[in-house]
Image 1: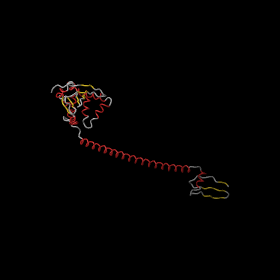
Image 2 (image 1 turned 135 degrees about the horizontal axis):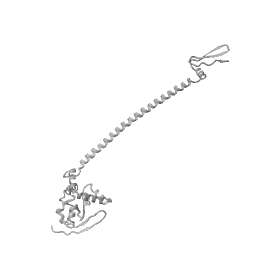
Image 3 (image 1 turned 120 degrees about the vertical axis):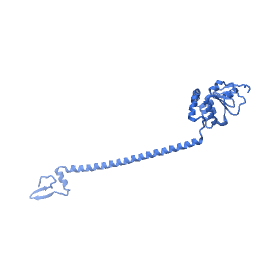
Image 4 (image 1 turned 45 degrees about the vertical axis):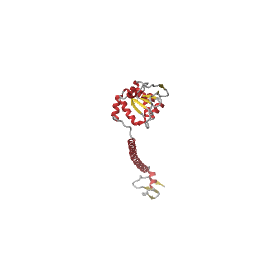
Length: 260
């Protein structure tokens, strides 16, 4: 292919750091250029390709770098490059989010990058850290998701969600049953305690009445005499000449005779 003249115009708007690149025979779809010698880059591209389908083209820079002389080779080696059909160019974290914006349900990452203060800076720092340790992150990714990662399937996600939802409901019912049993046991203990208190109150009332009766029995003799008038063992009166003598039963204290 013959050399192509490329015009580069820098744009600074918000968090965007895009560049306008005059591309040769720009196609209808955006292009993501990556390092074909990087295992982690190829691993990520295979995953993104399954997410975006045919809405994004993917090419290693070793194949297409000559078509974009305005982009240094060092930039291709350092980070992925996203080139849109209208000539806009982005790299690193922004290029990743622009690529994911063409996948279903993934456009919020680009919105966060452009709208949320500080998110773009943190994203670029994280991307730079991962890019500096690509072999280690590739090994971790293979260990966690295998060599050919697949996007999460909705049937599997739905299956797991429904099972998890049922497990939550089961846990709620078991917790309610345990709490209800504990509440019933507590209520039984309270009822038994109240019954015991009532028995204790009745016992104390009985003891109090018996104590009052005993106190009356220990009163002085005259009071005991008048009290005994209501008793079945009523004292007998005897009249001898001009004397009135009170004779009590053996249980009572003798009282001096009353002289008329």
